[in-house]
Image (cartoon, rainbow, N blue to C red; front, side, top):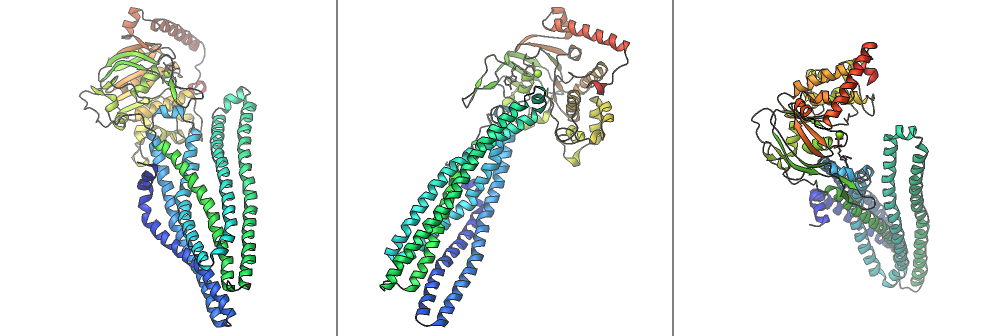
Length: 608
Ligand SMILES: Nc1ncnc2c1ncn2[C@@H]1O[C@H](COP(=O)(O)OP(=O)(O)O)[C@@H](O)[C@H]1O
Ligand SMILES: [Mg+2]
């Protein structure tokens, strides 16, 4: 189905009545507008026939028609413009809703500025198309047909003479608007680039300053801004010479009407009233042609913007429809089964517009089973694929079909919301929203449904108590970009508290204990294993102290699963790099313990 039909059916059709009423008022506007020159003609002719009372009556008709135009014109605009606002509103909602269903893969390759510009610039261009554009289409057609018709009836020769320059003017106008359109589109892209630069500089300010790279960033910003200024000035220069040209063309027409029409009056081919009417006709035609230029602009721009919005709305989620319910749980938690799982991250290729696949897979031929209620540790050096594995189980990325099963059902067929409802996932880089810590912990709960006792218990289990005491408003401290910046460790523990707040069947923890001291680590490990009881858990860590209590440990090495076993089994079998790391960490932990014995313990807040 064509874009237009879909757009009409999904967004505009419900405003049909508003459009029809608007069209009726528009037609009334045109009729009255067309009436005025006729009344003027009659008034002038009455004066000439020495019938002043008739002339006054026609003059009053002109005034009444003028007032009438004010009313019906305003009504027609309201009836056309309101649907525009509503369509824009609906489109924005749909765009946002669709984006929330898109997989990470999509956001890995689309620039944030691009998405912002579709939701803002493009949405308002579509509004202009639906409101102003559609109004102008009808307005221009009605005015031109009626006015030119009237003129032809009145005097065909004079009509041709004075209308020609107007059409030349319209042609100039349309080509100028074309050119402007190109510049405006370029401007929109440049605005997207500029917002990307601002975001990048804002997010990377610390690094840019520390590396003294801010001048370079400023220079890149200035370049982008210069380009934007250039196209903006281009638009202004076209606008500034356009109006004089149009005015001159209008005057040429007027001169023709007065000269040729005057001659015709003298030679009695034309009444004085008709001549007077003609001066108004050409003003109306000029107005309509001017409107035609803007209409073409609005329609063309709106059309392209609509296409750009549909590009996002139609972007496939990349997921086959998944609506199978979660399998019933027999035991606590869900059994997981991974079979021959190979996964490559997409990489962006410079210049090409799609994403290719990177060389070495992040995971290669990985197979293992996790029983329901089992707590499985995942060990591996940096880059071994631990985070990728959790991302695949959590469906941040989609694993190849059939490679991951939940209680015997292929993961990709299970309703994704239901699956997410059963999960608690603490990713490696925990994200906190700009709201209170309490709201961050009870993330999914609406304000009225929040259970503050659960929040407090979750925070305590996540070893946040000392940190809370140090924050100005405890749990009600606003954190994140617009609040207090927490340390990496505090952020991780807040994210852990967020997981503890949930009732989960599957717990996924990605290296959440990478930034804590020993005493806290022991408390956290206790809490994690206590909370994980009654669920299936994958606990990723490079800290062996965290993993040794797991029922089993998977050892990943460069994307391959090299061993599975309990802590003791792995040590007994001499599995590398597990044993090597175990020795190193033991030695380091002993050193630190000795150091601590020699000095007063540093507070955790100071360390975090
Ligand atoms: N978003 C991504 N895009 C491209 N490559 C990635 C992405 N995330 C991870 N990788 C690559 O996948 C491999 C495994 O990474 P990861 O799963 O993060 O390992 P770990 O968590 O064990 O450190 C690494 O080679 C890494 O560079
Ligand atoms: Mg990782």
